[in-house]
Image (cartoon, rainbow, N blue to C red; front, side, top):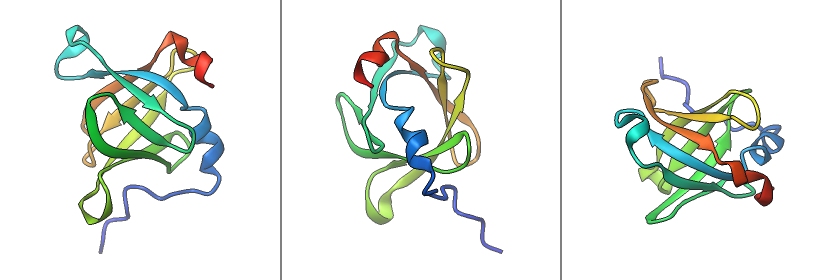
Length: 116
């Protein structure tokens, strides 16, 4: 039996994607809170930019509180799970590997409101 795809795009997910729009600070779980966070900018429609990272990245809505982060394009694309936790304005997106291992936490930055 084939495993179901990690990311099942949902048509209803676009409103959910809009709530992710703005700036986030990515903190690597293995480096802990000490590691300097990387800026993550989620744009309308789900495009993701990380300054200094040339990869094409996009967030796709999947389940209620889960999103899918696609890194790369075409057959080489890698998929990760983004799980939304917490309440505004202290929301956290947890970046998980396909196996469910926590890789990073993306914390919403205080100035996100300006970009909505």
